[in-house]
Length: 270
Image (cartoon, rainbow, N blue to C red):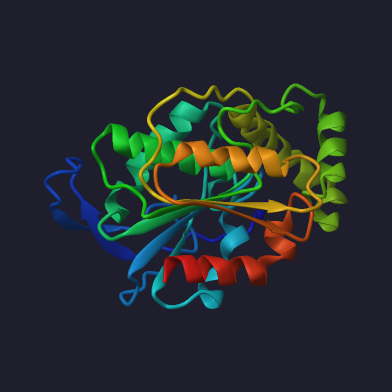
C-alpha cells in the first residue's frame, strides 16, 4: 500500500442513477479511481481491484503496458493513498454497495473487471450487485490469486495480534522490505490491512445463478495459499467460457509475472 498516491481530478461523463435511462451528464472523476487517465480511443474499461492492504498504485504501470484500446481504471479503496484518512470497510456488502454507486458513472462503455486476492471477491460481488439492479454487466471477469467464493479461507488473519499479523504478512511476501522496516508506515497500514482481512474472512457466499460473462482465473505455481483446485472452482460461477492459467511465482505473482499476465489480458480483451 502506498501513502503517496495522488488524486487527480478529470472531467468525465455520468450515467443517471436509473440504469435504464442512460442519461449522460458531465462530472469530475471520483476518488475511487486514483491514477485514472481518460482515453477517448479505448473500446473497453478495465476496472482493477487491489489485494488486501493494496491500493491503486499496484496498477499504475498497466496503462503503459496495455494497448490504447484498453482504459485501465485502478480502484482506490478508502484507507489508503489519498484516502488514507477515510475509514476502511470491514464488510463485503457495504464495500460492494459503495463501489457500485461510485463506479456507476463509468459504465457507459463496455467494461471488464480484474481483481487479485481480496480484489477478486470484490469484483465478483460487484458484478453480481450490478446484475441485481438490472445494471450493465462486465464483458469479462478476471480473478487472480483467490479462492472461489464458496470456499472459506482456511487461515483467518484478522483476529491475530498486531505482531502475529505482521509476521504472517511477511511470510506471505506481501510487503516491500522498506515498508517492513518503517515502523511509522506499518502503524499507518495495520488498520487497513486488518480491515481488508476482515472483509474477506467474514465474507459469506450467497448462492445465485452463475454470471453470464466469461471468467478467467489466474494463479501462482508456488502459491501456498491458493491451490489450482481453489481456482478451478471458479468455473461454477459462469455460464460462459472459463479458463485457468498458472504463472511462475508465489501469491504475488501479479508483480513478478506481470509482463506475461498483461500479455494474456491484452489478448483476452482485444
